[in-house]
Length: 370
Image (cartoon, rainbow, N blue to C red):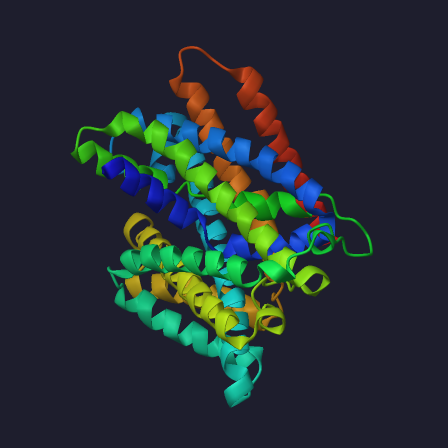
């Protein structure tokens, strides 16, 4: 039972904001290139998470990535892990804030008026209250919210089956083809590293720790299949009208009822994920780095919001940068730790992956600064 619970929690955590970027990105690069990326990044994701699972099993409990880095690689690696982890999670909070504002605007503006800035601000203040109060039950709400969202996705597929066409699925937008666009977004969309130590500790209570290495590939493969199903369903229905946030344009094709339900539960999924990530950042700043609690809360909430007000509002750009840089740095640290704990080195796997991640970081920085 714990194994099934672990698989569901890992898959449920991975299915988040990154998922909603994938249909639009598919419409930019084409379905076949996207399938190739899903296979490639999916395989890399399984390897990295599997290696992290091995690191968890060979490290004392109640540590997270910075603690693992210090234990196996030293204090400098721990500092890098803190920087990449906190920066990446603040970027994720910003992405959830942008997406939540868009969803809330689509739901409420037809009835009450107002623009995306107003609704994003409302969404921000509600999030701040939850992060400040530290709601503990949010993970259970997140889990059931995702279950209901997947059920609604199946309903959307059935309801919109008559709208799905091969032409829509094969549609590619005109303009410059950015072949690198799916890379960072998929790294972001398939990342569940923060949950691996949590699942390992849950299993260790029942003396089933080694089953962690079975949970990891199963959870990621389920996430991959749901992601591919989501892409085909949304782009198959909306085609050239696929929006950057995936669900926003759905109502024009299926009517307001099913689209509104998808938006409500999509909003619930990303809201609970935002709170979970926000609480994690706050606790790292407060517990690990000894920043005062209120200042930790203020940094967690207001840094992403100020970036939004300064004009950082491109959801796909944000998750692409976070995925290709901060998550890539975490992945490199995991690969280095894995090499350290293994008596039999597998450098033909770890070193090429490190090179891929380094090249991705360099490309993303150059692309972002252009």
